[in-house]
Length: 167
Image (tube, rainbow, N blue to C red; front, side, top):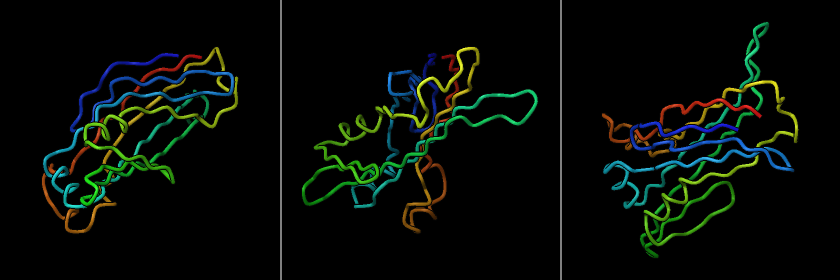
């Protein structure tokens, strides 16, 4: 499987991404660099939780028909700060983990390993697939006063990181 190098973006960099095969199926592994703007750092420390959305798609191009989406993954992570315990909390679904520093929490969010809903051997060896990954702040989850802020203060997202997967 092939991966690629970093893509520079505002607030989030995708350093590396790869789709790898294992006995039980396929895995998406990615390394990101997540940074908060001063505006978002201030909002987080005032008790506003930040929601990040990760989007991944694996596409097989077809000359005779529209492209086929082989895999589509959408994850949401929640970053929050508890002022009483002075701890950061990262949640994904019903799983949560606490951290003592913002750096530890962002480092945790920056490492991804997720099993794809594909059966073993479902990717053809003679076919190349186009993969794309991005992570972004879900601004719609922010409270309305923060949504009304103008400018690039809350724009934390990566560009689509694209690479070719050849099983």
